[in-house]
Image 1 (cartoon, rainbow, N blue to C red):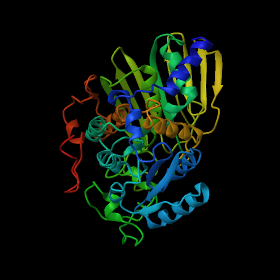
Image 2 (tube, helix red, strand yellow):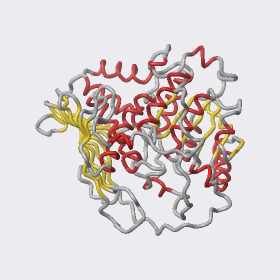
Image 3 (cartoon, rainbow, N blue to C red):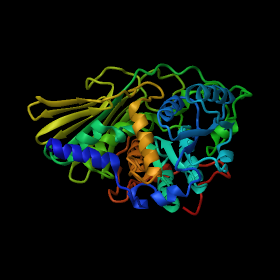
Length: 447
């Protein structure tokens, strides 16, 4: 791809089209114009004021059309902190509530940001869409495969913008090199290696304790079957419990696996092989794997590999996270910091570093890439751009993470998958396609 073609590709990818259909990832300009005050502000509610909130807030502070009208969290302490930071940083004074269902009924909300635990993502999304709100939902799209299907159905039914927070899809550098890969810059692409490493420590002892008076345990559980409150659930540790989390694959593999799938131009694989286990701090209350090696074989014998090490920080690939794409004529390393293009001999042809900043493995993340992703979401609401990561694409990349989790929960059993539908053909996997719900929280039957 020459410089002229590259510039055209970036422009086309970044700007999208003015007319956007349901299958085309957004909302029409006519629909946007119907929103009261839409020509001036996009009024948003933020659900979840913990780890990811600071990144969302900082990005909204850089977008003049953003007006935060509501803040929501089940922890009253987080509401106080979040409100104070919005007043100081944005000069805005949003209203607050502990129950997102109440906020969804308010007329002064055009769009919602969902940054709450994984088991809430799908429910909050389809409730928001039904209420006429545009949705930006953080990864992973869903807690299980069936919820992903229902989220896509809701998006198509209500014809509103619904973006998954995989912010690297809005990276100019990633868009550029993936476009070149698709145009053959490294020949025929046959494999991608996605990886993530971290040095997560030991989880503190877990014990049943009374629910703090500032914490709404009933609402935290939401769709999940009820259980006792344990002392480590107010913070990040819920990620490592099947009731609420999706493990490191849902938590982080979503990003890099998505990059690999994008480069390979794959949808669903034919076969999934996994070797996962818990190898560190074996007696602590982390109930999932902390290490996973997975392989997804797509039609045409294209392979996507995932190497996830949550508690061993040795940088096998020279970085803490990223994706390496292999082709018949060369290879590419790409991550949030930019990309490097190599020929078949291993000689670097070109390097492009990200013009901005984005956190790598820090809790909560945040930076200029997040800002671009949210700006793209707003422009799609206005009908000026296509979504860079619409929920139907996000659900597919999330599905690959679900495959990894399902295989692990079945004893690292290989899975056979229908590459057209994504449905698992291996007997026994159907028990993990959905989940048990608390009575009254079952998914809607009209999606």
